Structures are given as structure tokens and as C-alpha cells.
Image 1 (cartoon, one colour):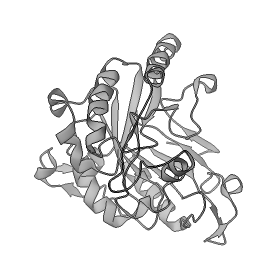
Image 2 (image 1 turned 30 degrees about the horizontal axis):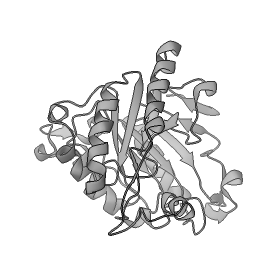
Image 3 (image 1 turned 90 degrees about the vertical axis):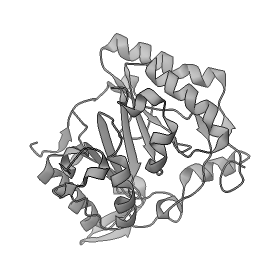
Image 4 (image 1 turned 135 degrees about the horizontal axis):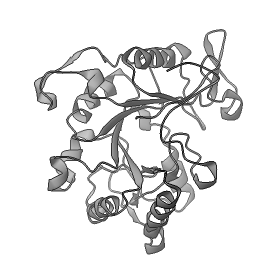
Amino acid sequence: MKENAKVNSNYQISKNMRESKIEWTDHTFNHVWGCTKVSAGCKNCYAEVLDNRWKGGHWGPGSTRKAMSEAYWKQPLKWNAAAKKAGVPAKVFCASMADVFEGHPDTLPHLQRLFALIESTPFLIWQLLTKRPENIMQLVPDHWKIQFPANVWIGTSVENQEAADQRIPELAKIPAVVRFLSCEPLLGPIEIGFFGMAPAEWGYGYSMIYQLIHWVIAGGESGHGARPMHPDWVRSIRDQCKAAEIPFLMKQWGEWAEDGGYPVRVGKKLAGRLLDGVEWNQFPK
């Protein structure tokens, strides 16, 4: 795909329909509220900070999960109707304030309701992101275990090489039309290994890894205590994606920008999201 000031691809929705400030989605939806930290990327969890501001009690071991209102659950039905009328599918990120596949007992009834909602909203593309891809096949309906609905993109967070090595093999087992990686907050260099051979136990025989991953998001950390993202780390991911012809989206630098090849803290707004002068907005076909 040709580089220019802005690199775009499919699934761009009109700005007057887009509600989310997250660069890679149009709407956010949470089937529940709350989670427990599991890896280095969780250290400065923005969702936990928000939860603590609003009474709290939904994060960490022994915590409960907050149920959402009936009015809240009706929102995706309105988004689906609007997307159908516009003739453009709308993307919905689930969940910004939880982990879809956490498996906490409080979440299970709401999770089944979520799956039914997904099936009833075919004009929404549901972007389900998890740090626990090993739980996915245990929690989805039986008929999803054969093939996920066409409007489901399934992703996992890979903030460093350790997370990538653990989670990419689990993600690759999922029978979804789109599997994606969220390298955010990017905390170290990652070799995705697109041109490596995936072993048979990943679920697709002996396949090339670039055939199993369909999209990569990368971004730095923002907020208080944000850790820097070295420019070389994100350039490497971009270059790996270009070589394998995998869509790449640069979400943000976070609090740190590049100065002379090194990260310097300047604040999220000033840091922006350009990578070598290019705004990367690629999506899966």
C-alpha cells in the first residue's frame, strides 16, 4: 500500500456516526465493568483509575464486576440500525473497561447475553480484545467453536515479547475471520515472526504465521506514570507488517515523542500519532 501523509484502508465510517475517541473503533461497549491485572501491560491500567474515581471495587483479586443498565444494552441495537441505514458497518470495541474473556463468575451471565447481542447485530463489527486468549474457546457458545460469526474480530494484547510468545499461539487457534494484535502499551521490541511456520497444534495444520494474523495495532502508553515507547520498537512492527502485507495502525505515541531517535516526554496531544510523518490507519480487508 502506497505511503503518503495518511494511509487508510477499509472500514472507515463517517465522522458524524463515530462516537469513540479510540482511533481504531467507532463505539465502545462493556458487557460488564471490572478486571484483574495479569501482565506488565496492566500496570498503569486507565480503566482501574476510572473505576477508582467512580466508587471503585471492581478491580483486583476478590473484587466484584459491575453490571450495566438495560438502557446501556440497547445502544448497540441503535448503532446497528444506523450502520444498516448508512450501508457502512460500524466497529464496536468490547471491552474498554473489562476483559471479555476474563472468566470471572460475575461476568458469565452477561457474557452469554453479549454473544446473543453480537449475533443480532450483523451490521456491527465486534472487536473483542483480551489478554486471556487461552480462555476464549472455553467461554464461547458451542457453535462458535466451529466458526465465529462473520462480524467478530478477535484480538489479543501483546505488550512485549513474553506476551507475544504466550498469546499469539492461543489467538491463532480461534476460528475467526479476523485475528488481530494490539501492541499497546508497547513496552519492548517484538518479533512477531510472520514468516515463521505455525505448528499444527495452533489449529490450522502447518501454516505461515502471516496467514493467521490479519491486523496489528501499536501504540505507546498515556497517563500518569506512562512508560516510554522507543521509536525503534514501533518502526520494527510497522516494517514487519509491511513486509508481510498485514494492515497496520499506529494508534498513538502516548506521553512520549521521538527526539533524535529517543523518547522524550511531551504529553499525549503534542506527541500525536504520526510515524515518520505518516498517519497509519490501515484496517483488515
